[in-house]
Image 1 (cartoon, rainbow, N blue to C red):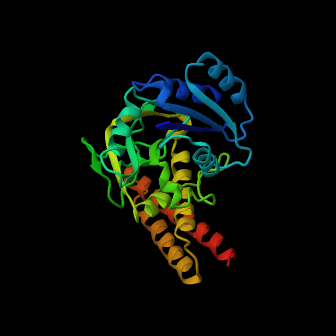
Image 2: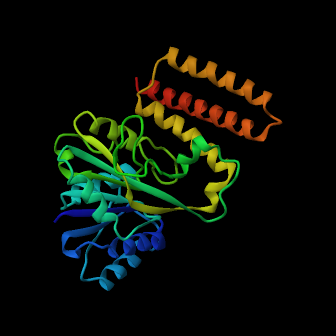
Image 3: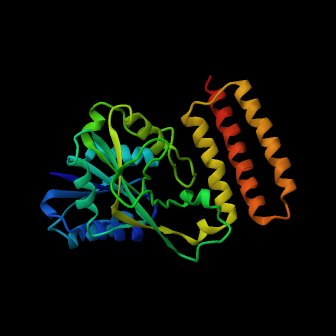
Length: 300
């Protein structure tokens, strides 16, 4: 088996089936890849609908796996354990893979045995028009990635995103998989599990990007509100502090000073909507860093 396509899902039955169908409709021999759906203990009818889909496509190797312990990193690690392929390609449950997705990702891996991770282009499908207020530097928070127009090495600090990221499975013979204290659990927005893992992969392997192995990723209406945006920024701060094991009274105090400075600056720009949004995002991020640091301090 050359490839394992892994789709992790939680309470998105219909989206997950659409993702599976996009993985089925590939310009790649069906005998050379499998599809694994990791159900992260969904409360909807995911199991029923996915099993129906499997029966409808018996000429493809599709497996349903229930992972009862919640957490995106837990689900991804279960996929790594279950994988039979030489490469494992992760596709978000609310994304669609282009027909050449598998072929293009595999072709990058086979350029060099030292390539341990490959990421692809991610185009948004906006449920409603893209809000004009989103700061350009924060578009990546909506899982949008257009890094380069050709296959290229992706050097630090840039990383692929989990909606379209693949790994050489043998990487995990040398390195631990996703940290399970990072990544989303249920409906929280904890993240940074991808950046933490990829940073470790870079110590031994190369990370590449291809614009040709692209996916389209849904951006739901509820994610286009300022409330969601600021909440996502806050959780990014929490995530970064936990990832970096940011702890200590001095570090927490420094974050507090920067938070106060950010609040003051926000008041200056209160009548300039764009600048105010940018400053408010910085305040939310710093607040998250403080909360993340306090979590680390409580662990001793």
